[in-house]
Image (cartoon, rainbow, N blue to C red; front, side):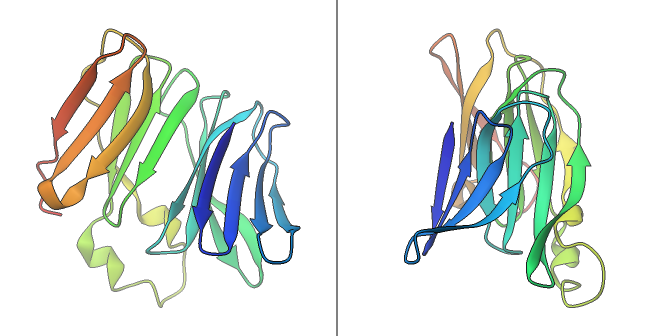
Length: 169
């Protein structure tokens, strides 16, 4: 259902309700993330904290992070009442598109960035910024151009919407 390539790693989301982390050079599956109650429709990689974000037909978003050589689920988020169709992450912004005709924007406060060396979850630093008014069609894809403070969403009706990111990034 979804792929994300990061260096020598491929992250996949599948109909078997799992996300998997693969090593390209070794040709092996290094981890299976199996905690959703439906197919995993989208996967994303957060480069700042080296974490993974998964979205599923169960309407749940899960934040995963490396923990002593393994991967653990650090945070679960349920803010949509339908399938999560698209995830796009930058250093400070995270956009989520869902089948309930809405998108949600998450922000990671910049002061959080300095605390990553301490104990606690890195991925849990994401905070819901806002869920804009619902659109007339399900939000199938989302992308961002954070240097210009823009987020773009694509709907099932074929329309693109451009959103202005108003928090200083």
